[in-house]
Length: 464
Image (cartoon, rainbow, N blue to C red; front, side, top):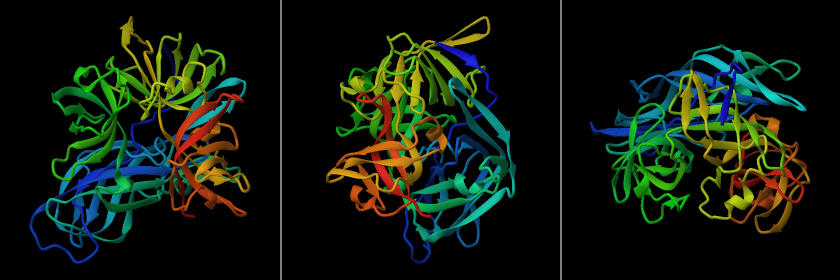
């Protein structure tokens, strides 16, 4: 069950902006009078102990040489610290054909949330109301992008927290935000604008392979599945989805229908409510069965008065909860993640029924889903151990976002299925260092020593 712990921090939903526009190239402008579609994706580069950087995004436009075309239907509150290397669909808009060379984002009202770690006491959350040095930022695309009629492209918008949040001589955040954005239009099939963490409530099943969902900002989306779609919980077939089902979707936007072509569907809740965020405290600690866990709330669906993003909430556990690892549909996941294998720093979704009595909201936990998360930092020189191919391990120095709650350095395990980006493979992590990298994967407990480790799905070398 959940009991409120007010920490006065506000965190909103976001990870990536996806705007719908058309696909394109890099040559001359189209002469057609048709329209294309653009979707927007946003991601971030994090900062020490900062777990939230909320901005009100009041507008996004792309420039075609004569006109700034809007690709954001309504202002959105976006938390750029929530997803590091992950993307979430927010909007889809039609734009005129043409050659586009830049994008402009207009922002307001920065709020920075961070974690205070004070062992042996449970961590607390604090907030800073920030100030912007500028309210509008224009970024030129690496090369002009041609949008033709009926194309679908994604606008990737990355907010660099490391460069944007001003710190003092002691490395402490001052609250001054000098916004640094990188933006680029990409074809809808590009991995840089894929949908890999979109939470939505089911409206209804519309066919043998389709259902309709409503996202956090009220827009409805058609979801299409096929024989290759992975349903992570085989005990809950799509035919059983109801208006009380909340799912997490991975996939791409279909260039013709603009439906979400789902590659993975994870049921988060069958009780019409979920909380998503970071575990900050577990009692008792692994390997004992946890009876209490604190979660730093980053998102909730639907929004409920009295439970606010940015607060730390206390959950009561009794062992009857269903534990699963998201995006993996094997029964053995319960051997890797259960109430004895919880740890601060894990990103989780919590599903269950919410009841209100005498003005007090109570969440009874039914499902706990371990989610993918991104960690950024420096590869530790000399730490790489190659077993075979890309299977092995290395260490990551990470005091950013969830890193403040995890071991330092953090051990990362890679497999021959790990995707290496801007790196030839595990063996490329060598030399005197440092190498700046971002790892996306799962935080699990190494049952041999009881320490959290990260199992990598992707390892990306970042630019300087």
